[in-house]
Length: 225
Image 1 (cartoon, one colour):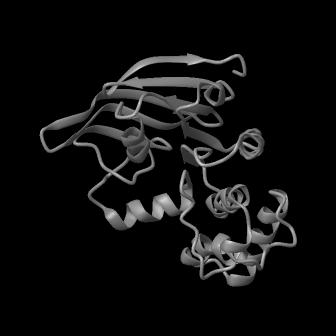
Image 2 (tube, helix red, strand yellow):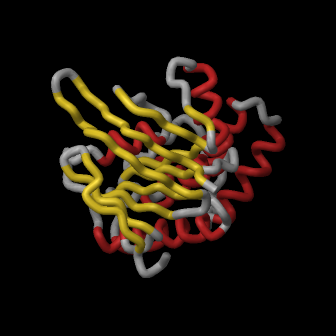
């Protein structure tokens, strides 16, 4: 079943055309890596796929339905319920504990606090952070921060996990840990779309989509497919 589709997507900022006609289909359960040089348009494409930005032209379909970018309230609810985000910079709130950071998206959706807390505990435990739930951000390492960000992205059981350079600030050991977490999440059924500039990380996905000058240059399976 198709989870996400871009049809003829173009994106312009001022006089500059960032995306020049993107057609891309992502099936449910896939792990897709998007690669390309800086300025190629890969992050712009990711933001449109995450419904964080709208195309200038073209259509986006999510779970079979055409996305109406003019309805911001419905769009926001769709993002919160169905899509999780992990960025290079984790954007965790320093005034909150790790547990509270992970709980926040669920509480915003109206989930009971006790239910959100239980789910957040489970996620932090599964990501190797048991016993650190009540620490603050400044009390943990960079690799642990990224794991907290992953837990936060998963709190609402999203259909799609979008990751934009998720290992960009991590050393090799923590990069390995994060990639193993992603593969385990994907084996559990969550679709993952990851932007990376590291070819060896891209090859750990099922497919590699290369973007150059606002166009898809290639789209091919890896040996993991």
